[in-house]
Structures are given as structure tokens and as C-alpha cells.
Length: 456
Image (cartoon, rainbow, N blue to C red; front, side, top):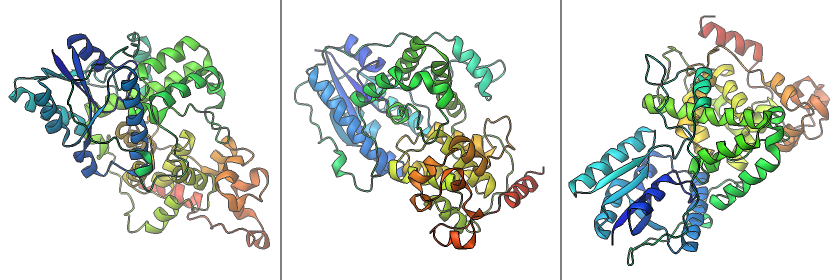
């Protein structure tokens, strides 16, 4: 009997899974393996919200495998050593894994490859699993990656994606392969109270419902803060509980302006992944050397604390930050305006905000999070690095009646309509009735400081 190991990482699904498909095609038996990686725990990336969602995904993956005669094998340790040990234990000739883009993933693959070669075994790395188009597949003349989104999108849109694979009918796992218990969500403490459920079944149901419902209106409503008219698929894409290739296919077959706008956002995800794959240091270092002299965390400690707590005195910023704390998620428009407020209005290093987001976001992804923060901060791929989002104008435009603010900032619930976006305009006696802070910064002063710092 021939055996292969399939090492699951950020691809926790059975549908459209090239490594699993290849392993099943070349072997009689397969070991579906997930390693609770101590290396990731050491980096601080293993935070409660993602740990809880991961537990859901692993439970769902195991259930799907059991429906097909198999099961998920879970082990703890350093991924390369554990996967190589499982391969040796089962006599597997190959280990199949999806290609990653972060420095950590690349080092993990290199280490696993060395371990396996020393045993006379082979590592098979599969592209096109975590993104729709593999990083590095599209390159402009004279460079190893695209640094501007629009030309990348034009090229990406012409690429023919492979057809998504169905889930396997049967998975046979060798007898006697031991597994640790699969973590359960209830065992994870410190998770956000409104955290969404995870897993492939939940992700596929959400995708189907989104395609039938919200997708058609997406072009008109994707920035609607109170309507929350987004797909909610980002955590499932981050954990690979749904396939990006399948999501693009399903959106394109639906057609229409909503689908076109949604596919464009999926392309942004691939764009950031190909940037990080080419420039791994951009996870921590500025993609473009702007020589920004950010205010120190010590100097801005009070403003940073207010921003994190949702007590800046700017209601739409505070609403978005409180949504993050409650749901482990934030509307994309909220992400843009809160990031702009910290990096440009408060002139605080983007890494401070990116770190806070990664501490809470269930869809916290190194490529998307870090490079979106850099885009907003003006150190990344934005072709207009000097743009500053005014939170009052943003609130009036994307939450015109203040419903989003009143949902997350209940102390202002008594303010009707758009007045909720400028509580400082109330009379002294009116303001005394609301337990809400004064603005931490004057927007005119903040804009002037930003322009001076940028030499503008």
C-alpha cells in the first residue's frame, strides 16, 4: 500500500484542494495532517479569535473526512519535524502542501523539504491553493512583481483560472496513526463575543447565500456601513475554508456589476499576496522608503489607547474600533478610515495599528493586513500616498443617518440623524447628558502636521 501525507495549513477544506487531489491520485492511502505549530504560537500570531475560528475549521474538516471514511490527524510541535516524523511513521513517500507566501511559510517549506530529503522522501508544493492566481505567475517587464494595482488587475483579469475540483468521494487513512484531540472553540478563552462560526460547511453556505443575495448589489452597497453589505467571506478565505478559485468562478458566472466589483476585491487579495511573496520584509518594513518620522508610541500613548478603546471622540472611528473588539472583524470601509486616522491624523507608525488589528481580526492575514495598512499609511502601493480620510466626511457619506454609529456607540444613541457624527457641536448642557469624550485631536491641526511631516 502506498501512502502520502497531506499537510493542511491555510487550506482547511475538502472542495477544490489540489494537494489532497494529487495525493489521492498517487497513493492508496492518505494521512490528512494538521500541526498545531509551536513556531506560530511563538510569533504571537496565534491569538484567541483566530484560534477559536481555527477550532471550528478543524472540527469541520474532520467531520468532512469522516463522512468519506477518513479522519483528520492532529499533532503538536514544529511543523517540519512533526510532518517528517508522520511521513516516516507511515512510510509515506511524499508530503503534499499548499505554497505559502510569508517568510514563515517559506522557511517552513524549506525546513520540511530538508527533513524529508534526509529520509529519502519528497515534498510536493502546490501553487494556486491559497490564492486564485499564484504569486509570481504574473510579472511585468523588468520586475519580479506588480507594485501598482490597476495594471495587475488588468493582467489578472485575463488569466484563465483552472476549474475548481470537487471534494473527494472517499479518503482512506492508514490504520494506527495516532492523533491528539481536535481543539474545540469552547476551550478558547478571550474570544470576541460576536465572533462568527468557522468551517468549510459554514463558508460554503455563506458563499451560496451571498451569490444568491448580496452579490448583485455589491457595487452599489459595499461601502454601506450600517447595511454591512459585504460577503463576510474574508475569515473563510484566510483559513482556506473556501477556495479563492471557486469564489472567483462563482462570482463570474453570476455576472453583473456587483460580481465585477466583488471580483476586483478578490484581486486585491492576490495583489497583496504577490507583493509579499516578492518582498517578504514588507510584513515589518516599509515597502517604499518614505523616511517618515512617526510620533513615538510613548509620545502618542494617550491617543493610541483612545483609538484602541474606541474613545477618540470621532464617532465613526470609535464605532469601527468597537466592532473590531466585539466581532473580531471590521467592515472594510471602517478599516480604511480607522487606519487613516491613526497613521495620518494621529501620525502614529502604521505598525502599531497593524499589530492591534492582528491581535483581534479573525481574518488577520499578514499579506492583506500589513500591506493594506501600508497602502493607507502612504508607505505601500497607494499611488496617492498623501490622501487623508476625514472621519466626519466619511461618516456622513457612508453612514448618513448615523445608524452604524448608534449601533456601536450606544452612549450617542439619543442623537438623531447625521448630528451623531459631530457631538462636539452640541451645547454645553446637551453634551453633559452624553458620556462621550472630546476629540483627541483637531482635524485641521492634524492635517497641517501631516503635511509638514511629509514636506507638503
